[in-house]
Length: 289
Image (cartoon, rainbow, N blue to C red; front, side, top):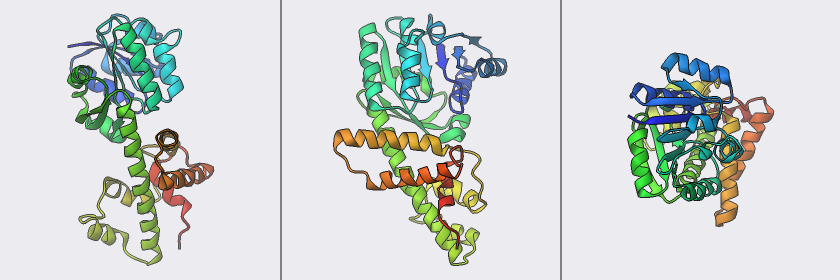
């Protein structure tokens, strides 16, 4: 079993770290909110660190799951960043959804210190993290991803090496672009069905087994019909992710008209105080018949 430092015990990080503890790994944990860190340690054991650099001391593996590029830069390269304490030959795995640029930067910074880095954003949401069934898309060298796979199998249903450093993040952007289009289509279909006075349960039964079926339909149709959105992946985070995709597209020359439009639709939901609601709250901006 490995000595693992885990940084970031939020909605996704907390359950992921829990699976590692249950798998028998020796964990040292850090979170900006010390109360959350102590609560996690009370539930799972392990050691509480007062900073990322303290958490990383002596660790074989450092795993992060934070919020933004700035957060990730701070906990790795900052004054109290983990990279300052990581030993040569150790492994860094990042589960944050961030830009490909910072993923590549951390790969280079790690290489200069003898640290193996993997950008490994996840898909599957809070439920996937809690159930240990996440899909993980990995960027990095083959040896680094192979080493990371041994650790990540404690909480993943699927692990795919998609390419070199940064490729995990760009693949996550592909994932979010796909989701944006599906949720918008689902929202329009829901309102169309309501305008036609259809039985929504019967409609779901009729179409969910055919070509229209999707994860979003299976898990969000009924809650959308109930106007229930206080769970799941928040609109605020989806806008962050779509922003990353749109920025990357400006660099690589791709055109994303649908993603850009849905991003603005999510801005409407934020203006309706729906920023912390699930992404399926997109239906709120479409007027009921």
